[in-house]
Length: 397
Ligand code: CTP
Image (cartoon, rainbow, N blue to C red; front, top):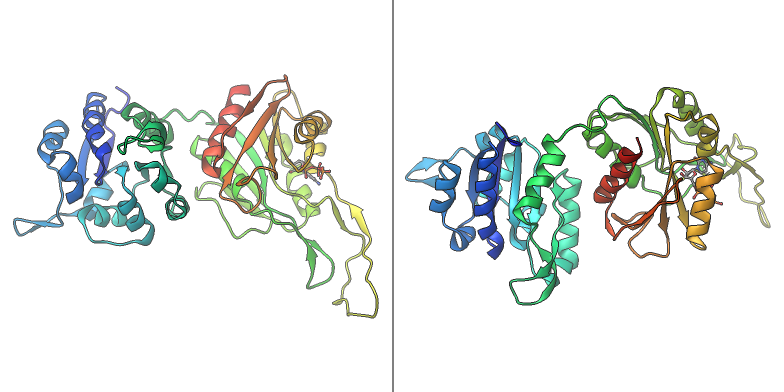
């Protein structure tokens, strides 16, 4: 029984997809899970608390106070191994994003100390509304996981994106993310992320727009799957969510190189996702450069190519993954980098795809493998893209 002894807390909000939760509860209990349920009043219009309490063998909670007794929302979140909010309606999503606490489900969510995942359910136009995207991004930034929606017939009769994932898909997601086999257990991983800053003088530098979010998402995903992760991170305002990721903060391409090259021998997998400067000022002025008449010319020298250096050191047992960010001839350039830098995989993100690359919360990638295989993916959140990349890495291990 896959879920034997696992404690799952389900928060149900008001959506027609709530009927699917009956099947989900039944399947979870069959697989050995203990299930507790908290639901909004709107959810109780779609599905009966009596049905759910019968199937879960636990009392279903809808109110903060009932029969003059206070329901202990704090203990529910502490009891659970995972809290799932499904279906996640637009209204509950907005409340979760802004921390509004006007019902039992919200009080439970806000006090939950366990990991939280959500399965959104909405009509296509609501799903594509910018507020929905913004709110989901906020939830991801809190560390909540989003179970991808499906495409198909919607309650409105329209066809499109926004259908809640099916109960089997929800179970698979929860199992893989929280209880699954740690497929990277025992593996040591080195990851670079973020930009580098190349100093011109004490106050100025040459940098780029990389946020570091993609590499950080990969570090989190690999750590969740059991790897021992060292993240060499250029200047970035973001940081990993997984406390076990060891972060080495660096600033320049040279510092990043020094942090990586000595560590590479001891790792099983290296993923170089940083946007490393290719050039750095030949001389760094000790004093602030003063403005003068006419132009200023800076002479730049080449930095060391970290990925290429690791490619030269790579043993057959090691897996090396590079990134390519291109604006023209994307495939050809990416494939060229795969060979010239001796990588096993190269992840291409094209600046021609809207929603991909620097600064975005989403990315659209194609992965090329040394053996000629390639995989193209839809635009997804960087967290979901990280899962796709790590799945590919695991499969060549
Ligand atoms: N890279 C690196 N060290 C550098 C430059 C790049 O490790 N000094 C790595 C990046 O982390 C990425 C890959 O090389 O994994 C490709 O980076 P990219 O900037 O796309 O390519 P470059 O080799 O720098 O070539 P170009 O800028 O001409 O496209």
